[in-house]
Image 1 (tube, rainbow, N blue to C red):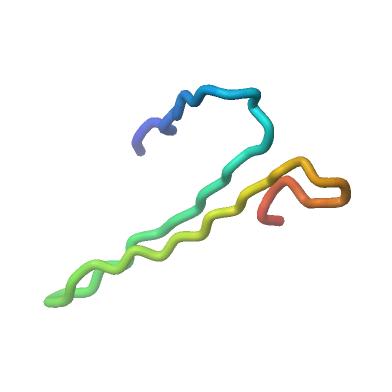
Image 2: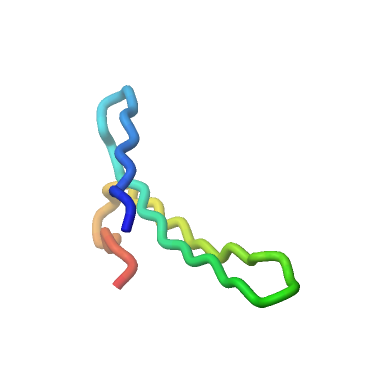
Length: 51
């Protein structure tokens, strides 16, 4: 398995972005990428993760 990528950003650090993805392969077809972004903006009552 590969290493978890680390993204360095500038700013006050308000919020978080989570991403989950999967690549599906079938013989003779192009691969498909399925992904989901979740943006957490530190609002009251807002969940921090996918679950």
